[in-house]
Image (cartoon, rainbow, N blue to C red):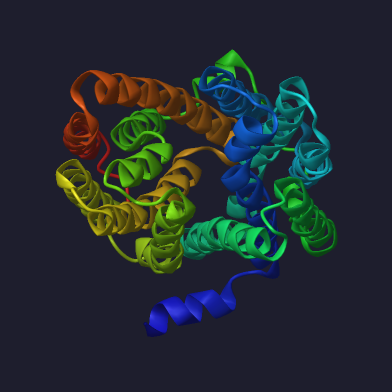
Length: 398
């Protein structure tokens, strides 16, 4: 543990600020997301189709926006303004959830929230690579991811606590989310310093179709592998549904996401720090093995505690793979196209998530819950094959 601890102490302040900003915003967002489906159905009287439409539009919007914001950050040679703008838009959307009296108002709030997420995502990931020394890049992505997923634990926990204290007044609890969102924007605005080299005019070409040809084949292989990972994982909503299918009371359903994100949080930084010294392929292979095991446990689950075990393994898989994939994208992309590269990566992964979730839902309805998770295990195996092909084509991958 000495080396990860040393890396943690030597990471630039800007990485900690980006991580703390992510923690605060994710706390806010996950508090809202843990209650919003219930708010839409019980308070606004929305049906499942309407709820699904809202969520689909929101996530699709975020995925598409990332490509343009990443390319724009390359074009402007500036990333912090877009990062702060994205977080500010997310914060500005939060008061509109408790004020909503119709589904159209919820849709507008979710649309603004996800636009904000899309604007900040790719520039923020590129800014991490700009700030962190190359030798600590894995640790930097691991720390930011760990703090982000810590927010995904705190949000549902705050929702549980305040629902109890405020007599299940959902609208009142949703107001709580405004506070960490505003703090997030404040931290990022005051504490993040963009490196001087990001402001210097470079002679390298800006975003264009010709510029895209400068993205090496190993980058596109990373995109493919990331998409296969996402197809194997699909939406985490199916973890919650699996818990319900085994008899977990609806009041305890948030515990599943808390367990998943707790293991994600605990493992993300150590995995990121390890990726600076170990083979990326070894860590990805371990992550795939954990995902296959998680899918098999979830496929065979017949009690709530089985689902908690599967969700915990799922979280460990995320810890080993998500920060590492970001590091690989940063390493494979030229500095002048780093924002564009992250935008493309997130777009393809976002489309894969939509497709995976549609497939998972269809399998669930036609063949039952086990089929959904067995299909996930199959896609994880395909990811392993893609990684083998990647290793053969790019011996320079760390």
